[in-house]
Length: 375
Image (cartoon, rainbow, N blue to C red; front, side):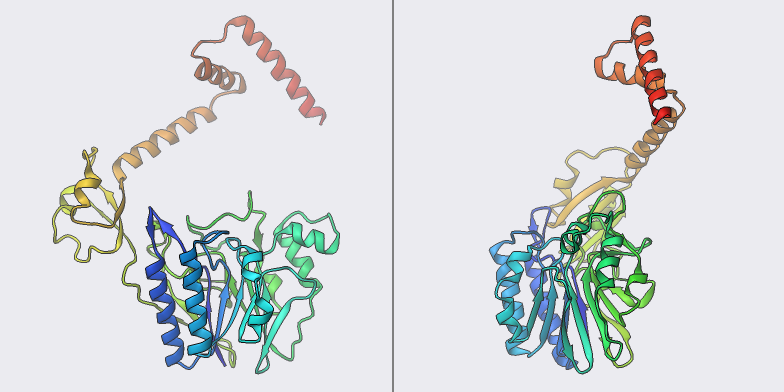
């Protein structure tokens, strides 16, 4: 049996005031045609279905059109969880009724994971969860991060090895995983990262959250990646959908074909003003200019040729600023505490500390140091 794994649809995504809904519609219905041609009847959607908690009506309508076609026209069974961008309450609406028609939705953390069983394969649905939810579920306060939370939760689950077990979840897995600018952070300071070893009981783990298609630790723990590029740092990512064969747990990638995508080019202003420099001009574009000075009204002039030019940057000026910032950081690192405070006071007040004020500052710093050592 084969199924398709996708995630991070972000329906309703707007980029620089441009709606991407028409491209998302193209890709979703191309996906259905592909599954129909390959006779694949199971679709896994691993969270971040919408781009925000309260989606636009247009985004809701697109999801409705897509799921209706999948279930009613193509007879595809859909297994879908909520991600950190989704509203659990909104996505859960009518889920018990829809499940009988082949649309299985899970948005809440339950004591026992829900699963859908097909042909000796069990699909476990685990939506995006936070440590606080696990604390509340088990009434345990001694949980400090996502790793501890998920480890505790999975320890209470029973996974029957007589079945092929597929986990569908939406978390940050793997310390070396590739991230993108358009992803919403789950927490501060890396506490959201989960080790892939927690999933050893599962034959395949369908992950959502990270937008770069990638495996984590092994081929069968995998991010499908986002449906399309959602920021310019994603332009080099090889976007695809994942086709999994449960007979041997083999994985194949298939590329969809959007009529427009994000592209980033490097060159001088004069090169970009040559109509032949870029052949296809309908993509959403970012230009990195190599000119060593600012070009007045550059973006307005370039948009005459490139109607979907969204941003321009200057690599030379950026490198100059970065070099200056590095020098500033290095000079700060060489300053002692008294000098740092003196500089800070001057930056805030534009006057120098006098000798009497510096004596007070030194006295306070010494006192603070003693208290820190006692602690």
